[in-house]
Structure formats: C-alpha cells, structure tokens
Image (cartoon, rainbow, N blue to C red; front, side):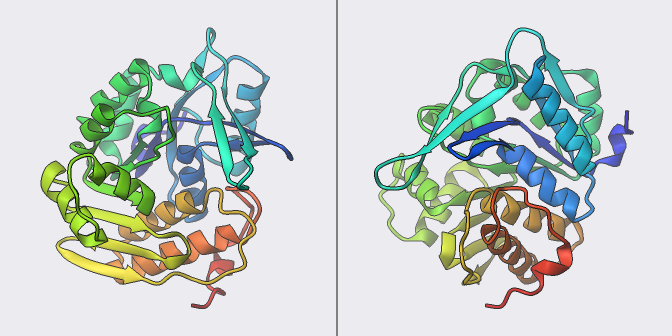
Amino acid sequence: MENARDHKVVCFGEVLWDILPSGEVPGGAPMNVAYHLHKQHKNPAVITRIGNDEMGKALIDIFSTYGICTDFFQLDIEHGTGKVFAKPNEQHEVVYDIVKPVAWDFIKKEDALDTLVSNADYFVFGSLAARSPGSKNTLLQLLESAKTKVLDINLRPPHYDRKIVEELLTKADFLKLNLAELELITGWFSKYTTIKDRVNSIKEKFNVQNMVVTKGGDGADLYYNGYEYTHSGYKVKVVDTVGSGDAFLAGLIAKFSEKAIPEEALDFASRLGAFIATKKGACPDYRVEEIGKLIL
C-alpha cells in the first residue's frame, strides 16, 4: 500500500461502468478527475467501493494500468459494482439510468481514510455519492478533516434532493457547477436572472467564496479570492463531451496546486476541457504537450 501521506489530491465517490450503445467504458466523475490529475503528475487517490465481481476486478486492473492508486477501493461482497445505462433520447440527448443500490452507495469510514484526507491539499467530492445514507455519512465525516474541500455538483435526477445539496454546499471551499445547475440551485431560494447575481446569492447563503461556472462552448467564469475571471473557451471540433467537465476541474486543481495565477489556471482548465471534447471517451490516452496546441 502506498503511503497515505503521498497523495495531495483525494477524490471521493462513484466509480462505475457506463453501459453505452457502443459498449462498456469505465466512468464516474471521481475516476475521471483522478485520471486527468494523474496525467498532470499529481498522484491522486480515489476513495470508492466496488463489488466482488468481474466488473469490479476490471476497474482495479484499468486503474492499475493507468498507474493510479487503488489502495482505497473498498470491496463489497453484498452489492455489485456500479453501472449506468446511457442511451440517447429522441432529442439526441444522453439519458442516464444510474443503478441503485450498488457498492459505491456503501463506502465505509476506515481509519486509513482520515490520514489520507487530512494530509491531502484538496478533497474532491460530488453530490451523486451522497444519494445514499452510507456513503453520505462517510463523506460528511471525512469533510471534517479535509483541507480544501472541492464540491463538483453533479445533479442527476432523481438522485439528489435540495436538503442534501444545500448541506454539501455549506461544507465547500470551492464549488464547480455548470449554468443549468447554477440556475436550478439558485431557483430554490431566489429570483435572480444574471449569472453574477446567482453566484453572489450562493456566496451569501452558503458562504462559498470561490467557485467556477462552466458554460459549455462559451467558456467559464471563475470567482476566486474576491476577483472575477472570465474565459471565452476554445473553439474545437467536438467529438464527445463526456468527461470534459471533469477534465476541466482536474486542470484547475492541478494549476492551483502549483500556485499558478487564476488567469493561467482558468486558461489551462479551459484548454484541457476543450481538448478532451475532441477525443472519444472521458479518459482518452494523451500527452500533456498536445493540450498546448489548441488555439482560441
């Protein structure tokens, strides 16, 4: 087992298989973020739970091939490895059927996790992993010892409710969400219409001072240490948007961990997210040097 003090970024939550019309691919936001952090040589760790089945063993093999730490993958003998059935609807939008319950709904609190999380500079978590009491309770306990808590909102109906999302928002030091999620959440308690007013309402209500709002092909807005930064995004030929938001977040964390200025961090994150959208799948093989070839 690797030293739990060696991992400066820890990702918590769902690791699963996306069952697509074209085949099965590993997925889950924590895994995707960890993959791209690993590409930036940040040696992330992932806390998750898999079933004692072939799909679980395959995830371990894939992570090991990537070179990503699997020491904190728990094995569940009662529940199967997570699966998501993804298929396009009549509007050509992908609809997800996220199977429940599965192993990652039952992540248990273990002593080694306290050491892992308390020694990491960044603890990345989402709202999906809080859909079940088991993993939610473990998450809330680990948040108590985390340094910088990064909440990646991932609202997949019907796997969230307002109470849980608002509780997680009060724990976050940094929030990442997209425009639709910003509008949905602020719609619960305000009638604001502009992005800036919506962002300020979240800051005031939940005391989240730092956040980034992604706007798809239109770039992103970063609110950091009292200042606002905007990036118009990179125009690319999109092959597949799956995982591009996770890559964006990984790029942002990677640069913040290097003490980069906010403009540089936002540009690199935008570049990485756009680059991944030109590839098939959330975790394509690539070299970091390739990212620099994109132009605005």
